[in-house]
Amino acid sequence: MEVIKIKNSISNKVLFDVVLAIVLLGSLLGYIGYREFTVALEKQYTDTALRTARTALTYADVKKIPYYDDYNKDSNFYADTMDLVSEWQRLTDTQGAIFIYIIQPNIEKNYNEIRFSLSVMNSNENSIHFFSGHTMKTENEEYRKAYQDIYESKKDSAALFYYDEMNKIDGFVTVLLPIKNHADEVKGILGVTRPMEDVRYFRKMYLRDTFIITAIVFMIVILLYGAYLKKTVLTPIEELTDGVREIASGNLNKKLNIKTGDEIEHLATCFNAMTDELQTYMKNLTQVTAEKERIATEVNVAKDIQHSMLPHDFNFDRKDFDIFATMDAAKGVGGDFYDFYLLDENHLAMTIGDVSGKGIPASLFMELRPMTTRRLWKMPITNFVKATKK
Image (cartoon, rainbow, N blue to C red; front, side, top):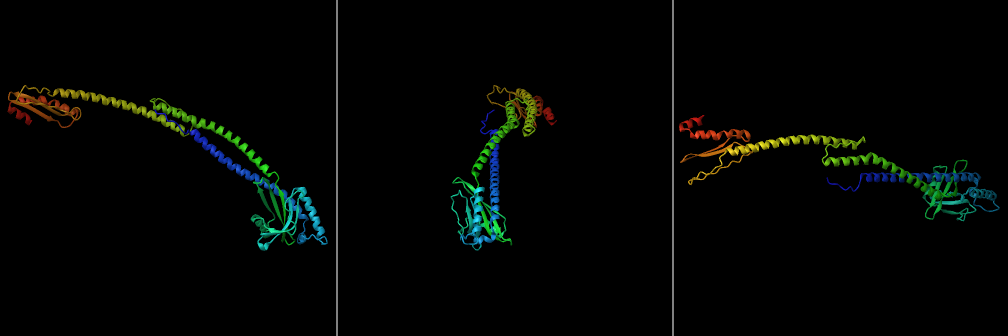
């Protein structure tokens, strides 16, 4: 039996599929977990910034918003403005905020421009400080949409995030709150920007821990599944292969004893049934072959007997004629026959016959004809005519 070199075993294929599935599933779960972890971090920083913003909002007076940018010491609102700046400065320095400010978007320009009414920067920051009265274009579409939602959709708050991964800078969160009057009209927006300290570190730690845990789980699953696969699939297939190879070598008494309760066991049962049927077939074939050989031997013997009964001596020691004859039956033996002999010095009798049918029945009938015809030839002519008419 030719031994086929296995290029890709079932175990390798199955393990590859399992590894691929685990990698894809692990990547998907890792990505989902990473997103959920980032959302949780953002919510934590947002809640902190929101508390600072709500505290800052308690010090603001909606009626004085138009006058917060008036730094004239003789102004009636100057002292109130300085008190507000002092409180906000304390908030930024003690609660980790970078920037607390009040802006008024330009509604006529579809919120694409804003004006700072008041702003306070953390004492430890060196960033650009937008002084009161400063006007600038809205930073991006996300901010413009947030301003519009607060003014038109009466949204209670908005949170916006900024990340600068290329420069390896931790992100920032900006919380926006509407400043409303007693008529529930939005007159401005209070914003608080604070850094999301160590957010990059927390993300890296999460990715590292996730990778380690995934690798450990991955190895455990591979080992357990490999052992399970070997016990339930690979070992039964090897037993099935060895058994089939032994059967193919001629041992039809080999029986496969595989108990897996699946398609492999069913296949082994089919092989066992096949060997039983092959044994029965070969036994019947042996009997039929032996019978055919016996019949063929008997037919050959009958053929030899039949040929021996035909004349084979063609030497009459005559110069006036030569004679020769042969007979080949269609089925070993048959009903064809011939005969010749001298009646006297001047007469040669020849008989050629063909009995209807072929095979042994015709040959048995033919064997009687030469003796009959010779007796007929030796009768007087009148008796010959009478005998032939019968």
